Image (cartoon, rainbow over all chains, first blue to last red; front, side):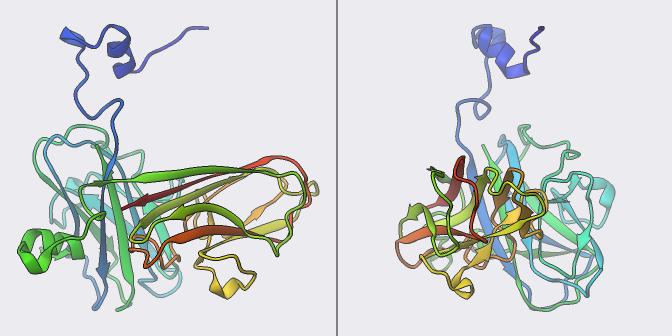
Length: 157
Length: 158
């Protein structure tokens, strides 16, 4: 049985020094969290981004969890994009948050509560951020319910 | 492009004495209470399992419960209520745990193992607990197996 090693295991087993130094925040570290909430008092347009956390440079994001209240009429297919800037250009977003643990389920029913989280398709997770970074979400289509609270947790090392 | 700011981001960006973010919300670490309960006899729906004790001020960020097989006959479904007191009054529970992968699915098949976690409907998550609080689960209907181990993780900040 062959054993393949992850990048940091390889460095660790090789001594963890010199060319094999493992940067801070990758092994034997703890996660930090930014917990936040947003109380909905008016419809949220798709041209608005919600800023849910500010993460310092060099941090590695390990998870993003957003608990959504009912935001639309029943059976409204809803998508939540997650990005590092306030923009309406979806191509600049680094991921679509997915429902539960099904990374292929990129939309959810806005007519019921939903827990959505970082997807496998996100390309920025677990990598050092190049600069201080805001984490934004954009909801599409615009919400129609004007009540309820969005709760979010961003985890990072 | 408009930017809406969540509550703590707003305080963080504004600064000043009126905008202090309380401990345990930003730039903080999670603690965990890991526990287990070995099933040696059927658990009636009149019994609550106390899986964690949290201090006043703690903010619950997640609750994960790994359930073993709870019934030997397929087709039976179960609901796991999560509460802050030992009670059989379902209305006093602060949430039903959702099946991991689909937190809107609050019932699960008892003939297979299941992982449940905090649901979006829970109204106590991410908010400071007013007092020292026990976290309980109640299974409905009663289990019929007399073996296996329930393992749980409660994540919170202080």
